[in-house]
Amino acid sequence: MTEKLINSKPNGVFALILIELTLVLGVFIFIMGAGSENIFGIIIGLLLSLIAGLAHAGLKVVKPQEALVLTLFGNYTGTIKEPGFYFVNPFSVAVNPANHTRLGQSGDVSTKSPFSGMKSSNGNDVNLEIGKKQISLKVMTLSNSRQKINDCLGNPVEIGIAVTWRVVDTAKAVFNVDNYKEYLSLQCDSALRNIVRIYPYDVSPNVDTTGDGQADEGSLRGSSEIVANRIREEIQSRVEDAGLAILEARITYLAYAPEIAAVMLQRQQASAIIDARKMIVDGAVGMVEMAPERINEGELVELDEERKAAMVSNLLVVLCGNHDAQPIVNTGSLY
Image 1 (tube, rainbow, N blue to C red):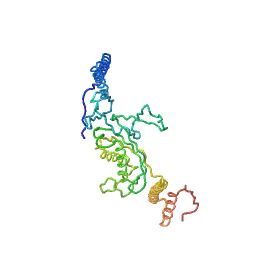
Image 2 (image 1 turned 45 degrees about the vertical axis):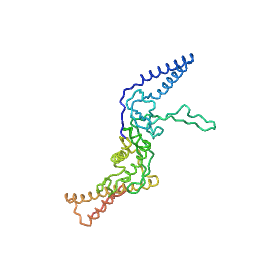
Image 3 (image 1 turned 180 degrees about the vertical axis):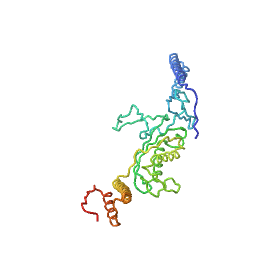
Image 4 (image 1 turned 120 degrees about the vertical axis):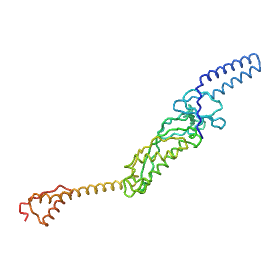
């Protein structure tokens, strides 16, 4: 379905004046015909009044950043995107299949009828909602509920995204899918699951996230910008036929699922402790290697192999210990 734009100038004011004049003329002819008992005048007056009343249905108001998709007897006639007051065929019907759908944080506003909150004769609530036939062309945000998904290592992860989107082709949005808002929401969840399953939560060895056959350091936590961009591209490829444009996707929430969060925290803490210990040992070994060389360079003391081994052992204990060293003063001789 190809979008057809109706580029006619706003003519609603002129049409409204003409309709009201026709209505006044019809009422006047009807009154004059009834007064003179002229059947022909009565019929003409009724016809003019009926035509004027029917013509009111052709008056359409289009606000900025809104569009009106029109059909006539089941055929798509065109879309009005320019703001203004228009007169169209009174039998044309504005179509918006998603007029009652409200997405989370999308900016949709529910329009309630004056009968909302009223009670029926049997005590049930009467909630008649007047649907908005205009399609919004504004930039909107979709924020679905958080999803629990297993990452590439099988760990359950909770993740939420916010998607910024807009309608760019009204014909595709209305006629290619049943409800473009529900379609977008479903495709966002599906694309999110497909992308998250490619990545580990944290950097892991021997994991290929790019598909080139080489292990990399991609992860959900460390590569959030790359992951969000891939999610946006995945969603865009899915909603292209619905006439929607995905402007941006951002990760709003990321955490391990509650059932394994405590265990994974302990694992991260243990990994951090091991890395810290490794750095301490590497530094201590370097200092121990440097100590005998500096002593030999200054020819301060000549140490045999046994004394060197004892000094190295003592230095390693002092440098790698968890507690502060307790020095012991040797008042005797080294030999």
